[in-house]
Length: 257
Image: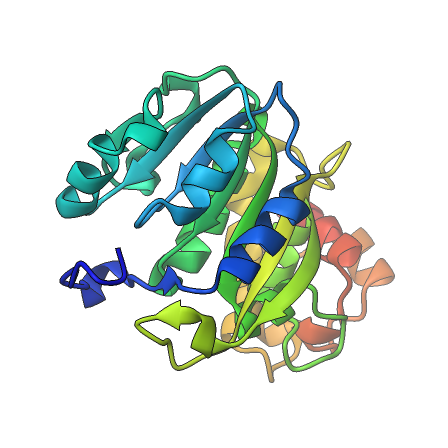
């Protein structure tokens, strides 16, 4: 595919893996089992798809580029692969032609990384784990410690539902076209018990977003639009700034209204 002069679309953030050693390393990291059902986001030229497909029970690939759909569909080594032309953010795993919970793998467009992570949270009941290639800086935000510059809304909202492990980092020169940033493979798994219940997700997201929109301000200012429960005031000092609160302390803020 590298020699096929594929017209890369900036709007779809296309960067294909050119290093066979990296493909092998990703496949090893996945620790595939013969009974696995795999959902691949953005199979691209199908090089990683091929390594996965022959080692699992079934596989669905979601691709937005019609030229790549055509390329994948005529490959004899991918016969039996279920290929869907579409945007992953418009898909419900439950409705895909595959048994769930699925295992997810994806080399995703970096400009929609946050949207895809929040999509994972919304689809929580239908997947087992997810290995996603992200921009390294986003990966570092996901695993950031309280009080650091990287710690923010993404860290907190993701952290109430998911455990995040940075598997390894990847330099730009193993891709074509070459991106301007370093990348990383991140593994997401679900917490046994979410820190907040599903029906509180929208409210929690709103509170955390409000806090970090003014991250240099004290909570009493950034959360002034919320009715603050006196019990919470006793537990959490509202002269603190949001980056000093742990994920569990943020969860307590659900009682502020």
